[in-house]
Length: 141
Image (cartoon, rainbow, N blue to C red):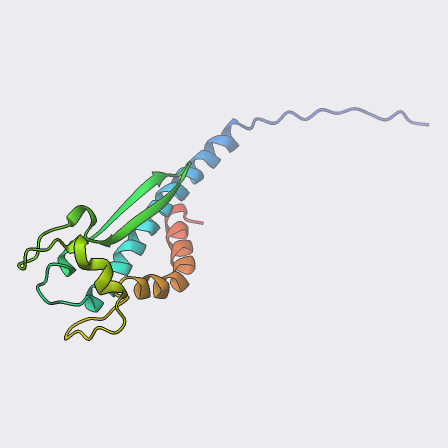
C-alpha cells in the first residue's frame, strides 16, 4: 500500500492584486464618466421642454457629480440651484422653478410642466446599457 504524498503550492497574489486594482480604477473612472454622460443626456432631453417666458429658467440648468470609486458616484441636477439668477421681472428662478415644473394645468407657448422629471424617467430606462457600454470602453473588457 502506497503512502499518500504531500505537495505544496505557493501562489503570488501581488500581480493579481495589482491587475485587479487597475481594473477597479478603470471601473471607477468609467462610472464617473457614465454619470456625467447621463447628466449631459438628461440636459439635452430637458432643455427643449423648459417653458420659456424670459429665458432665465432655461439658462440655469446645472449638475454636480460627486463621490469616488470607493463611495460611489451620484449626481445632483436641476434648474436654479448654484446657477440661480434674477429674471427680468425681478424674481429669482428658485422662487418659481418648482411651481412651473409641477403645474400640469399651465399652458406655455414653449415647453411644458415636468420638464426635468420626464427626461429623467425617460433616460432611466437607457442608463443600464449606456453605463455598461462606458465601463466596457474604459476597461477594454
